Amino acid sequence: MARVELVMPKMGESIMEATILKWRKKPGDSVELDEAVLDIATDKVDSEVPSPVAGTIVEILFQENDVVAINKAIAIIETEAGAAVSAGSSAAASTTPDTASVQAAQVPYVPQTAAPAAVQSSSDRFYSPLVRTIAKEEGISQQELDAIPGTGQDGRVTKKDILAHVAGRGAKTPAPPVAPAPSVAPAAPSIPAPPPVSISGNVEIVEMDRMRKLISDHMVMSKHTSPHVTSFVEADVTNLVNWRNRIKDQFKKQYGENITFTPIFVEAVARAIRDFPMINISVDGTKLIIRKDINIGMAAALPSGNLIVPVIRNADYLNLAGLTKQVNDLANRARQNQLKPDEIQGGTFTITNVGTFGNVMGTPIINQPQVAILATGAIRKKPAVLETEYGDVIAVRQMMFLSLSYDHRVVDGSLGGSFLRRVGDYLEQFDPNRAF
Image (cartoon, rainbow, N blue to C red; front, top):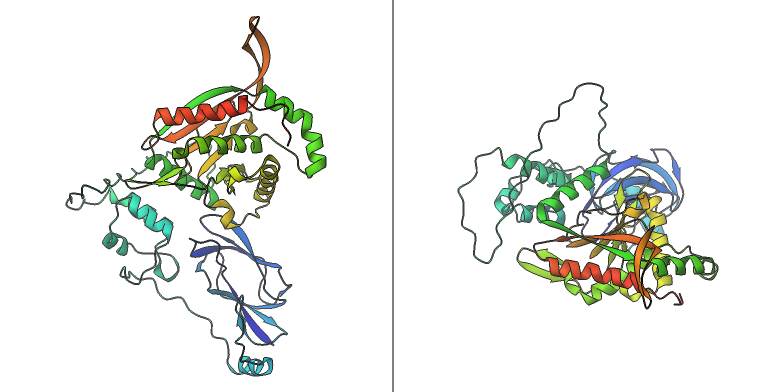
């Protein structure tokens, strides 16, 4: 018999730990190759962890709700094959299978124990990129960050720890003010604590699920970070609607995909971003990071009622068939909770379709660290004035509202309004005779 370590997988470039949500197997259960053993969650996405081998679960090293660092052993699987190895690692070339089996039998497995939580110096204490970003936005110095007690694995400071620290700063005596350097942006004020809620009468108290807590924190942080302004335009999309109604069956037959309005919106937004590249940026203090890649996120509703934003990378390089395939694939896997962490990261602009719920317009909240988000409203038949060579006439047209929320720190009304109008123009000028 050989023992194989099932390790916490790396779920993305900036993700260094994950939370165990649920064990699907218990000690003594058999498991097949690539069969899901447990569900895990990060700040980005939920995911399944498959078994790297076929065998029997003999030991579980962490419990549900534990936060575990990547590449750390979380379970032991006993197999009929050669030597004990860590999942994903390879045996040394100089070690023969027979020798490795003997070594595995002679050296018993000793599970690692987590070190007690302690305050560590900045020289050896790990901070995730998310924690460092929050610290920077809240003006928390390195010394103050080092002093925050961590509840994560090995005493790490989690997102919950630093947000609790930020919320409690207002109740403490402020430190003597230090004049900031001229080139450094002033620190943002701390978020005030919400007022207490009166609980009386006929009520039911329900705890937020993990994803809703993350969304809540992210939305509050976005409004705290960016001064939001929203502009609106109304677009006549009659040609677009008529074209889709005419070709959708042929499109399905040729590509095996149902074409919705979303890929057409993505195409128009990608073209408009090329015309106005300063809408495709992020802010880092007093620096502007201009994104050369156009990676468009699309907000997708989950069966739980929560939202997730998968990303279409390099959307400006895809034709309508390619955009349709990506939109459908990402939306379907989002509903089945099968998105990979990399597929919800790296977005530079976001589209949210409030028209799906019958809403005609909305004022969406910016998906940080982006600086703008577009809401597409429901398409409805309305009377509209048309200019003809014989004079103005009133006709029934397919109309929709577009709403753009943007960060007024770096996007003024001229840029935001011009970009939004350009998206509307591309939709209104849609060629009804175009090919796929």
